[in-house]
Image (tube, rainbow, N blue to C red; front, top):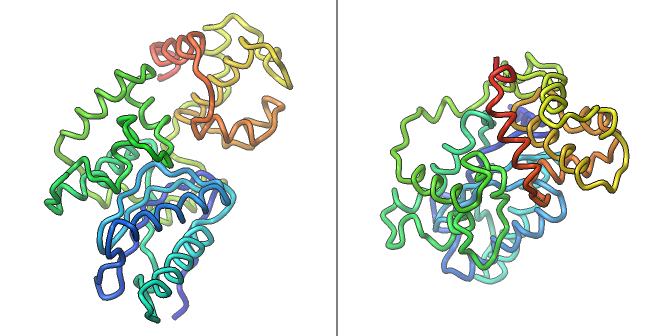
Length: 298
C-alpha cells in the first residue's frame, strides 16, 4: 500500500522523530552528533524552515519544525540522506542508518508550542543522562543564551513568556521545572481538522486581522493607511512589526495576506514572524497594550 502524502501548508508545525534502524545507535560519539547538527544548519539555511527545538540522543533525534514553502518531506530527505552517506563512509558500512521513514506529528502551535519544547528538552532527563536538562546536544542552552552555536529560533517562544529577555528566561526555567500534564495525543492535529479549513489556517487563532488593525489604530493614534508600502520611518516600521507579530500570535491572516494588506515584500513578513527583527520601546508598548485591551480578546 502506498504511503499517504504528509499534509503540507505554510506555517505547519511538526514534531519530528528520527530513530535508528532496529533501535540501534545512530551517533557513536559527540563528533557524530556535531556532524548531524551541522547538516541541520545547512538545510535550515537552504530551505528556510523555523526550528523551535531539537534534541540529539544516541539512537534518536527530536526536532520541532515549522515549515514555509518547502515541505517537510524535502527537508528531511536532505538531512537524512546526507547524514547516512557520511555515517556509512566514516564507519565503512552500507545500508540503512535510520528507520525507513521518520515520524512527523502535525501539531497545534498556539496551544502546545511551549509544551512541545519542554517535552523535547526533557528527553535527557527521562533518559537519566548525567547533565540532564543541561545536556549539550539539545537547544535548551540556546534558550538560556548560553550556547556557543545558535541554530534555534528562540525569540518567539521566549516572547510568549515576556518581551523582556531576562524575565522571559526566568519564566522559561520555571516552566521547564513544571511537570508535563497533557496527553501527547492532544498536541496533534487530526487530518480532518486540517481539511475543514480551505487555506489550512490555524483554527486556534481567534481574532480577526482587521480587529487587530483597529486596536493598533487606537493604541498608536495612527491612520493604518500610513503604514502601508515602503518606508524608512522608524515609528511606522515598529507599528508594522507589531501588526505582523500580533497577527502571527492571535490573528487569522496568513503571511501572504498580511504582506498584501501592508503592501510589503512577503520575505519581510516571514523574517519578522521568525523573530528576525530589532526591538524597541514602542514595539514593546504596542504589544503589551494590545494584550491588555479586553475588547481585542472578546
